[in-house]
Image: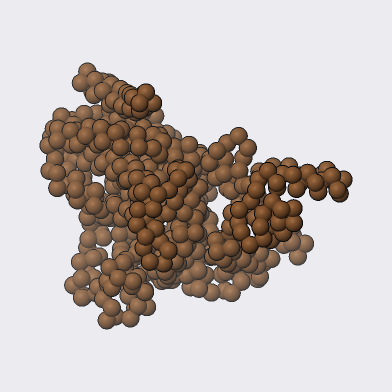
Length: 274
Length: 332
């Protein structure tokens, strides 16, 4: 995941309309889409709302002029756990439907239900839309901009400071991790090598974990001391300048909010009329 | 175990967020008060380190698909043990989970509250207290760290399965069995790595390991270890016995009044109400007990009520357990 960190941050440094938008606008817009998508009840309505949201996110992705492969790669990386739950849905009944129709009988008394397949798709749509919103947000916004944006929106200064410190040292530990990994590889150590005894492999990984822990602790101590020298105290916080939103940013935010409200409400009205 | 968005209805996600926020607030207070001076930056840098630690992958000890299934360390138990407080784990894991959720999309935004409760709060608290108790009882740090690491992964996995069952997105028994078995095996990596890492840290920097040395066997430790053992056994056994059908006594009673056939599961609701009326009339006993949280639910609230009822029950049990153990240890 740490390699991915460099990769994602790199895509955040590109230049496009979406990249240049203020972080606050993107955070609010994407969070609105996620919350709206999660708030839509488990019903076939999710398909319409989800497809429209997905189309909107993909349009923004195209506007950000990022390669489609980046999106697909990132999506594949976060799929496993969600996909595991989604795939197994088809074999079980759930409380969101009253009647279940068997569409396939498998050995050992396992059945596949039509309603459960539909429910699995509902979950899948919700999952993919929410993950896509996050992928768009993090691929078009630098980590530090996101932090500043959150600070401007009222994130408590204690959190802003700790997140700021964490983000700064993430990249330091990214390099440290890379070095340790290279050192292990040059010594022909592979944690997946079944020729080595399990205990030995675990011990090596354990010692590596211990080393990273001590290194990060000592780094933390040094940072703390150097911050003290520069006058750090209990009331210290990250300095975030005021930055009013520009007209295009206001309009983008407006479009996002209106879109996330109008689509679910409109779909609900149309479906209730039918 | 990072639950994504969309697997909880929004109301339940909000309940988990509120509980998580309480613990985040407490952990921030811990970082300000308990760490000598104001060492918040130190914990923040350590969080970056823990994030790096989480990227070290290792194959499962019992590989189901050869070379295909791997696991990594969460580090909640390690952080809590070394820094001497479960709040350390809550603080560090919150930072890591927020980053994973917002930047990587690993774990959802609305589901983040639940993820913080599972991995940070439960992982940290169970890891820390298990380590302390086992270490006090058997004076073996290595063994204590191994069990603590294992528990800090297994308990959150079980709770994760329960949360998804409450949300109606994963059947309880299936969730408990699959998540339980998978994380019980992965827990071996967590436990082993925690133990080796801790022994290295104790040798290299004994001054940073914040251990509470109590000396001797404490009643509280016996209670905690016994409690965890019993709870775990129940967690494994209960799903196989839990059933929505009436229990033996109910079934006999209902069949005696013709509301149900002994060998079938169908209940005639109208007849069962009549049967209850007939018994009340015969015995003259009109006493009834209105449980505060009937059927593990809070009246008037839907699913979030059930989640809160279970969490409330667990908290009450914990409070009772700690109260009793403190009372016993004071007498000693």
